[in-house]
Figure 1 (tube, one colour):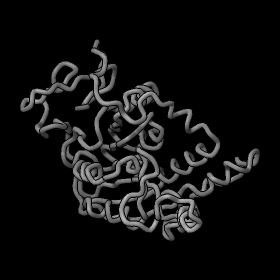
Figure 2: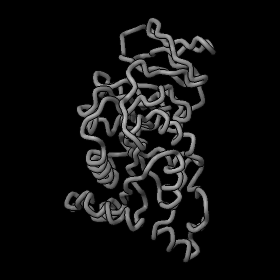
Figure 3: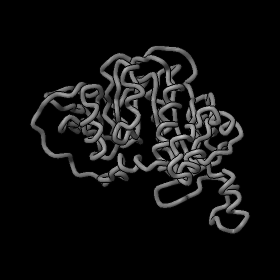
Figure 4: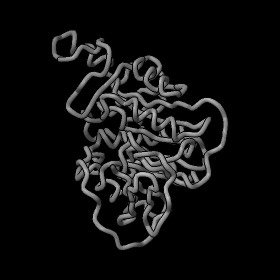
Length: 298
């Protein structure tokens, strides 16, 4: 799966990804978001295995969290549907990672290919995240670790707004709550149920998204506000934070499947490696390497 220099065509035309063309790096330079970035980095650093064979960053964006894991795993695979974000990740991490353009509901990997996976700031973009969770469960080996985040629809702020008549959706209703066309939330209990139903055991939930709100209002002393690693545990246990970061595991113990790890995202047949391309012998699709990014979009 390693990248190689090759003259290749422009990426194939596909449906526009949610963050295509968005300056996501600039988004994180806002002081409050930078504070959240530090917290997420520290939690991911603590909750990931110390070392591993192969990690999947599903919905990697521009590789924001790659500095946490590139020196801890033998192979790092970054997947996103937004080509422009993968280009940004390539410009920073090309020598350390494999970059894959794919739909997270149709990832091109073999069963048990990874011993760790991230789905950070991903699940809340799916009204029905079950196909994404099922795909993550399939590609993780027994004993594999998943870190995930989601919006907590039943946090105190939304409950208070609902009681005061300023919230269009009741946080106590069952099922996903739509914040806008592309963002959804669940209660902490529903989130745990979704992850458990996919075949994971949820080890813990951490609460995030509290102290960054303070940073947004304190101006010059924002740098004195701690990241909130310590309070994330009780906030998660009490389910009192706007967002939740969870750690879950696949039952059992085993080993990560050896290379090759690729399968056709359409028909799941093992792919045949060519010259900077993988070919499916069943459906005859071809998945090329384009400017250092493997294009597995359907």
